[in-house]
Image 1 (cartoon, rainbow, N blue to C red):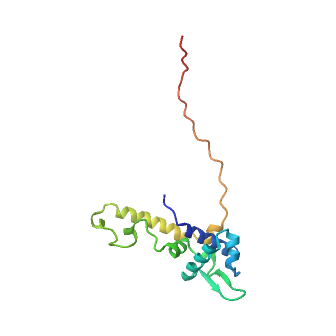
Image 2 (cartoon, helix red, strand yellow; image 1 turned 30 degrees about the horizontal axis):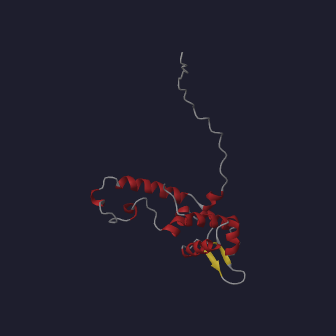
Length: 156
């Protein structure tokens, strides 16, 4: 299964809490409580997000954290790269020369196309988009059933 790490998921959750009141400074303890993420994990992701320039930190009695820019200008690609490094489906999707079979591999271009589509989606999706409610969907049609002809045979 392809997925982001738990740390990236938690970072996104913490960022959505910050984005909900974007101009306000929040303490790490408040962010942990509101996000329901362990305080130590919140501290860890806040440090990484601050290093990446996605959040600003303030010291002192009224210190805390706030978004460094509006949620509409924070892309999911920024978040993933802040926590996980460059996005790549395979090693050769990110850097040439990271694979021993790269010179004679026939699928590198395919992985790079998939990588490009995923990266494009993460670059077009913002933190503000993550806050938007899930659109209502129509009730899915019932799955078609398949009839199997059968007959009960009783011994005579």
